[in-house]
Image (cartoon, rainbow, N blue to C red; front, side, top):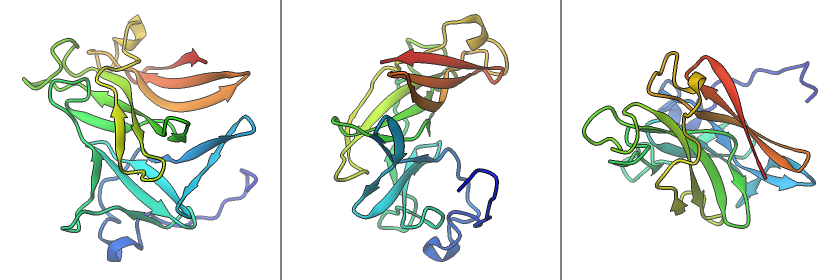
Length: 201
């Protein structure tokens, strides 16, 4: 509550589905927010908090208390994917959640990081293996329903430090979004060497 005193709650998926997903691979949580009085605050839909997460496709989970989370599953009891990589697009290899998703007039906006495949199913207009940033919009009344999704990234590697380092194909990997002085500040990783900043209105 004050950023000094903490209480450990344990793994987020420990209680869900009899612990089925507790030891599985999980990362890149993007909790649903809304914009109130100039700040992003956590939002509820249907009385629940929601979180997009995952990297080889985007998953969705809900919570009533913010520490016990319940991943959505399909009819077979496996994790349900709300978006998946697409052949011949900037996200042909993986889709990984970025900054907190936000409720807007257009719907729930989620910025996500796409990696171009290094195989024949890659986007031919981009370097193979490149990381870039796109967006998907979900229905506010149904956070798993896609309304629209970008076919091209809006942030791609162009600067020298975005195209050198660990991922030489180029990396712009969005992770933080802050509203400050009536502008949006998007913080992103660059080839695992620096942190970049893109500013928009």
